[in-house]
Image 1: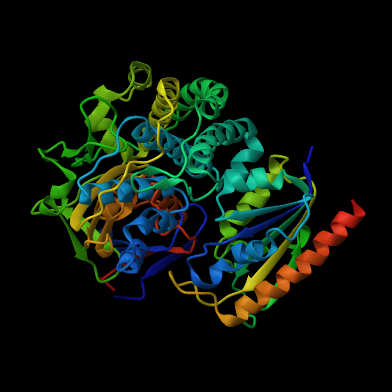
Image 2: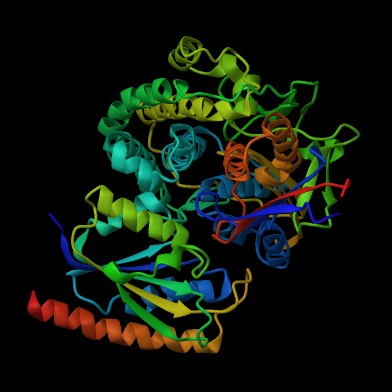
Amino acid sequence: MSSHGMVIIGVGNPWRGDDAAGPAVIDRLRDRVGSGVALIESEGEPSRLLDSFALADRVILIDAIRTGAELGTVHHFNGSELPDDLGTGRSTHLVDLVDTIALGKVLGRLTGTLEFIGIEGASYEPGTPMCPEVEAAVARTAEQLLVTADKEARDA
Amino acid sequence: MTSNTRRVDVDYLARVEGEGRMHVTVVDGVIEDVEFSIFEPPRFFEAFLEGRPFSDAPDITARICGICPVAYQSSSTQAMENAFGQEVRGPLRDLRRLIYCGEWIESHVLHMFLLHAPDFLGYESAVHMAADHRDIVELGLRLKKAGNAIVTTIGGREIHPINPKVGGWYRTPSKKELEALVPELEWSLQAAKDTVRLVAGFDFPKIEQDFEFVALSHPEEYAIDLGRIVSNRGIDIDASEYNDYFEEHHVERSNALHSTIRERGAYHVGPLARYSLNFEELTPTARDLALEVGLGPTCNNPFKSIVVRGIEVLYAVEEALRLIDAYEEPPAPSIDLDVKAGVGHGASEAPRGLLYHRYEVDDNGRILKAQIVPPTAQNQLTIENDLRAVLEDSLDLPDDKLSWVLEQSIRNYDPCISCATHFLDLTVERTSRKG
């Protein structure tokens, strides 16, 4: 039985440039969403991610991504249409993430809906800040997710 | 080089954290070169720490590794206390050992079940394995969760524990909080034994290496967070002597430093080293089970590291239960620090092996210089040597199978390549000079 209506998981390493995008979105949402929404910061460690999936029927994952699109582009995918090659170099974490999503399905941890938000980054050097375009994309994504979370709370 | 060149490029991303590259050159069927290169963030962190207050070291170095933050916190706090001529004892130290047990369980179980076992069972990944062996994966996930719970209870949060500090803790747990961990740890005892028996039944390549093992050793306990640095060839030193016996070299192909024993060469850190140097300090249960599954008191087959990790999980579960049982709430969460200028050294056994820290601080405790030597850097030459040995046995294999066994050889070391996942490109280049 899921304990929340929705879980938002930001994946990334806050110390590696644009890779901080996922956790930065979570930071912006903290204290601004209701109790029906769980916020999780993750570095992609799979067993904890699997536990996080099981928290809610609706899972939203946010990670930095590399597709060659314009810096700061925000990509939206739903779980059934994740690109096949997402795990082979487009994102800094999606090897683990793709495997973990698949594991979640095989093991029955991921039974509801899954949405993936990829924020296009460029620099992943240790100790560097996010670039302004990614910062802006983080802010936009957080605001959109607040609307989503409010709607979720109203519909609950 | 001629047109007979064959290249096999493997975008190998799935199950080694980090960013690295392996390149093998085979000329006329003879191995000419094996290079294993990694990107290594601790070097960045060393520079980043300089000029910062001593108290930042545990929090900042914990960011080096998402899998083993406790190890970095342990070596850094110990080094700072050493610089101030102080030591944390009693329940404050026992809590450090206990949280470290949690990290060993988490890290070893993750590696064994989700990364290494699929190799032995012939699956491309844990996902494929889970489809056929859901029970095995579920066992691993539950066992790992017992480790997570220890780290979260003492460390204060799920990832990157925030509770450890130089001198002890910001807050110590109550006895009741620790006792809440006991039922799952008691379940874990049997689960760990089952795990050892399971992985001991895998087929292992028959490779025995003449390793110089290096690990911490302590006369009264299986060394985790305290001890002297010893080897099976006569090293027996305090952590403060580390740089007298070990040195680091810049290698052009990698931004990592390769470590060697001065005037001797490669050495091996990690579970095999700990086990082989400290077998007698394991609990009777762990020792007996090791012998039952055919390990013997030393182990020189790197592929059997999965079995040794299992033994260490069992030990960590037993030790965690013992520490919880013996725990008495301390009067204060930390000791008073006598901040002064000095040089401090800290060494502890990260899940992947010896982790050495050295700091110079000024009168105000500001960091003047930092040195962090992670286990993967120390194992790099040994990994290359293993890859050579495996290649010599396997050169006739087609490229895809050869890549598999080479990847498996790298995974024996559970290399924590950077702790933010990027890419390991594996290239096997076969050429002929005969034209």
